[in-house]
Length: 486
Image (cartoon, rainbow, N blue to C red; front, side):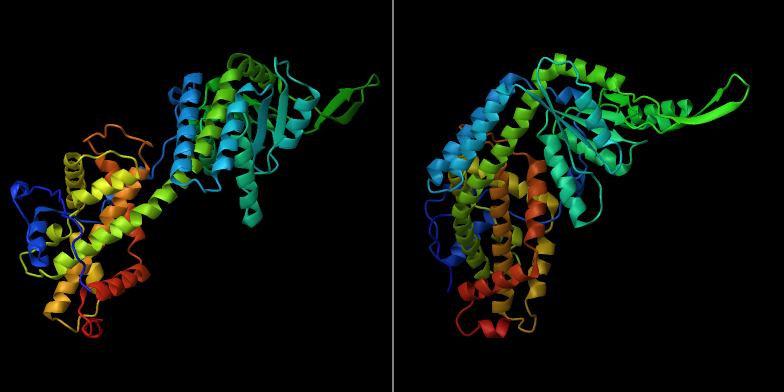
């Protein structure tokens, strides 16, 4: 069955005049709509250059790590707003009470009297020994201290992965992390440290069991550690310790001139660590709690926004589905050589308006046209219309090179591209602020390109394309013809 037009398609095209906006009326035939659709442009795919670039994360620098009370209050208000919006749009959601409880817990964290310190690192680096020493030799502090030893990091197997996940959770819920290593950082250790830094977690890096190295070797390793974390850790936050010194042979001369050897265990060395801990807790104790609270609030915000986006996506998908078949029907009925897929698969401004309304983005028609034009611009630069057409044509059988088959390739390609564009809009809008009272006409083209590539890859699966083609046959091809085409 051929799709019918429910409303005008307000197409924002790229590099094509909008002069036909002044026409008094539009033809009600699908052929007329197909001609009018030549105002628009869309393409999908590509963008590897940006996608690859975004994959290379960089650690948080010291200048970025400052969080003040104003940021805490601002984020708390944002989280409360998201939860309230979820309650409005989906009052029956079972997550609302849980999210409100988590928000309340995060806010109460600000007045917590104790400071939480996590001790973490790989296998056999001295975590338990350090915990025992710090417990027996408490550090003078204005607030109580609670130490938590995490499971060993970087162990292999399924249990090892679970232990690492637990250790990371404990580290990120602490106010301060003591990270132990027995020598120069491995790539895995550095990656884990970067993860903590990106979460704005304060870390003291401990070169433990340093007594097992000669003095020159010990100093060299300390210098290499300082160089490895330059810009992410303060130099004073890299400390040498010895929590379980190895016994040493000691030879002593007796009165009769004979030599006696015996094993002696040197005292532990944590003086520098105790001094640094006391200084941090005195100067930055409150900021550590702020950063901890910020991480908690960010977690609640992510959960609340995800729940809200799921509700909105369920409402957005029917809108995208409707538009893809309107555009597909127009392309199917006009399979002439001059009709470029860039024109027939145009993103229409009405879909931008509809999706904007779902995501609380108040787009005027003028802004929707600008948005459609921006999306068309990104898609044209990515230049994968040919790839899209080849993908669809490759799924179709080519033994029926008829008018219907030719139109079907164009119609399905147009529907496919329009769906990609709509899903790209959805993901882009999901990443925006909850409410935009005055949307900007300047779209983030880098983000659009990355989102487009992500959506295109996710919808290239053969199973999805077969489903799309089956739906297209039911909608676009007259009864009895479908069997000849596929």
